[in-house]
Amino acid sequence: METLTARHVPSSLDPLETSVSEAPLPCSYQREFNDASGIAFRHSGWHARRMRTFQALYEANVSAGVLDRFADCGAAAWLVRSRDLPVRYRIVCNRCRNRWCLPCQQDRACQLRKRITPHLPLEETRFITLTLRSVPGALSDQLDRLYACFRKLRNTPLWRTHVQGGVAFLELTLNEATEQWHPHLHVLARGSYLRQRDLSDAWHRITGDSFIVDIRRPRDLHDTLRYLTTYVTKSLPNSVTHHRERFIEAILALRSRRFLIGFGCLAHLPDDPPDDDPTLWDSVCPISQLLTGAKDGNEWCLAVLAQLQGKRSCQHPTGPSPPNE
Image (cartoon, rainbow, N blue to C red; front, side, top):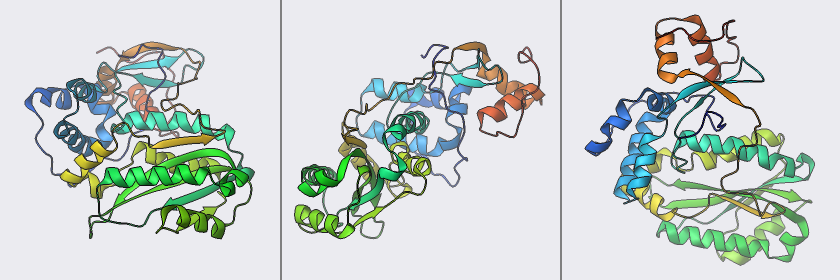
């Protein structure tokens, strides 16, 4: 469990999923998924996908410890308040930090954006996409090939001349008609002008069969980073997560493999960046008390809950603490 001074806490919720067909969970995990209010609050925006994800992890034979942490993510949840800015609230709770856990990856994506942005000046940054021709075959083999080709590209004189460094994000899609995988890389590269035709020729020489690349200047680096870090957060589309066999294949193929690759001047970007927010937090109440108060119509609880859900227009009323349970 994180201490009350921990800072990795989600600040918004996703819309609830609908039209769901859920696989049954192992009996020993039913309570964790259904009973704890903190878990329900943290995972309300992706409940259906979370159930499918847990089932896929279970069938992929991940360790019992991984399953336990995934099921317990969000438990022991408390509302905390900033000492420096008393109108600012967060929730601290158990976090699994699993790469397939959406809230944990959202936390990570926010931290990554903070760490990457200072190293990528807008005027020196290019947004590059590298694709491989879709072919039948195991996903693990295609990922090996994609990453190997990218390493070779970074060692070419063309790349070394024009690119100082950057970060590459993996995107993985599945053609529902052919059921062929289509892994590709989105790259934010810091450097000088690079002709698309030259990059396409170099990529084709390396891959032997793929030449489709794209280079463009991002109009807004913050928005581009937000877009790209969604691949760290939610790397698999519904066409994969709704396909049991493909989902399990993806989990196995991506095990111990990086979604984010730093190179050059960003080569030492950590996989799990630390939170450098110096804010100290004081405990206020269990999340169950906040949710109960909001359900009963308490204005303080409703306003704080609105802030936690990212509804910035809601101002929380004057008042130091929630009502007693």
